[in-house]
Length: 102
Image (cartoon, rainbow, N blue to C red; front, side):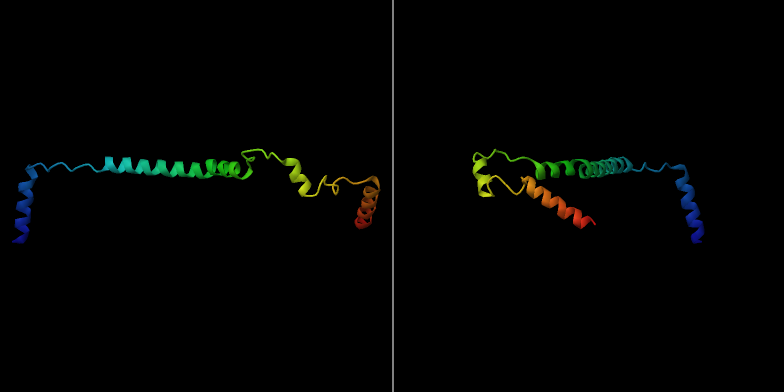
């Protein structure tokens, strides 16, 4: 008997139109596209913009040139004679390098 009730109910609904379903796909599409765009922009920012900003911050020259630059070089060792070798020192250094190379 329960089967007949179900069949009769189905026959009654056959002629009636079902109400249209609300479309949620448009909202999901917009949300999905905005999420995809955010992911792409985040990737580009990480791979392109961040290294250039870090390089700029790490290797940029000082904002103001130092006014007492000669005084700073005197405090660190004067004329820095250790870099300017005399011909005799250079000859001795070359001899040491040749000995170590053998």
